[in-house]
Amino acid sequence: MATAIRKRKLDGIEAARLAAKLDRAARRRERANAGELPGDPEMLADGVVTIDAGKGENPEVGELRAQRDEYLEMARRERAEFDNYRKRVTREMENLKRESLSGFLKEFFGPLDELDRALSESEKNDSYEALQSGVRLVSENLWKALAKAGVKKINAQGKPFNPEFHEAMASVPSSDVPPNTVLEVFDNGYKLDGFVLRPARVVVSREP
Image 1 (cartoon, helix red, strand yellow):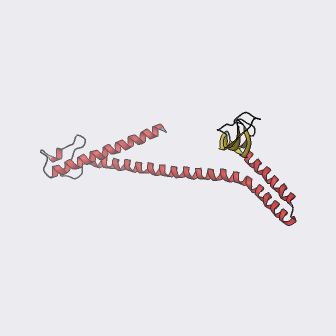
Image 2 (tube, one colour):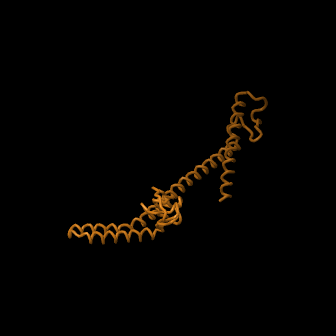
Image 3 (tube, rainbow, N blue to C red):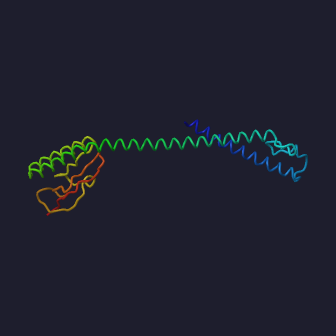
């Protein structure tokens, strides 16, 4: 990879040098034809190529021009290949993201179906027990889906307050536990592989 990059850099430098040679040769040829340079125009040179002022383009100039065009075409191909590579990588990343997300979301379809059935059954029979049982089943299956993805609940109740995992919503005086102990959990916190997705929202104790 490094060798290929160095080669492309050298190709670009060589193309620039060839273009500069052609420009110098063209300017000296124009000056020779206009009689601005002393001596025999056919023998004039800029140190790189010899200019034939009266017999058309010098063969060496034509060769340089051909090499320049070749390098420019090579640069265009390299750019086109890079653009295609960038587009291909973008498509692959989008497909990977879609596949990963779709696999995770599919885990929620079953619990949602169960919730719909529980709601429908409770409406038919006017049964609170059926609704309660259905909701409990949905909660269990949702937790199974989250656990499968690596999500864990932050166990905060009775723990010392830790701002890394807890967010204090209020504090109340208490002589039953040490200060800065979690007395109540308002909202559960969640983490994924040690990364906190949401801190637990809690009530902490303080000195009476």
